[in-house]
Length: 178
Image (cartoon, rainbow, N blue to C red; front, side, top):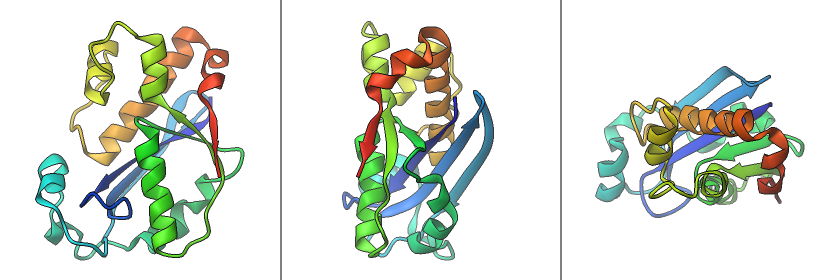
């Protein structure tokens, strides 16, 4: 399998308030590369969000803006590329909102939500939060709500599902983002 696992953290309830992004690139069923960056948002920080991920305003003072990050990551978001996220509606929504907010061209790509696939394959789990799924599957998750650790955990969940249930069983979960 080839795919990219994506995870955003935000500074407020506003979806365009991304403050960090991670991509874990999987090629031939192996983690091949990782991308991580803090992002300087142009919105106020909400204490609740800071409490979740621990990223403060002073941490992103010298970070690139989302448009600068987009120049680097844009090639990963192509029509035939699978982008995976745990709770994909959130992460895809952050990406879409950032693109709209900064008036950048929207992109089309394939997406899969590992929350949905985990519910199907593991209905016995008490919930399907990232840390819960990782615990049950024996997947390492050192710093939950650190975008890089979360994207790596998400990638490992999909690899586990593909290895144990087959890639064909994952196809019904794939959607196109327009």
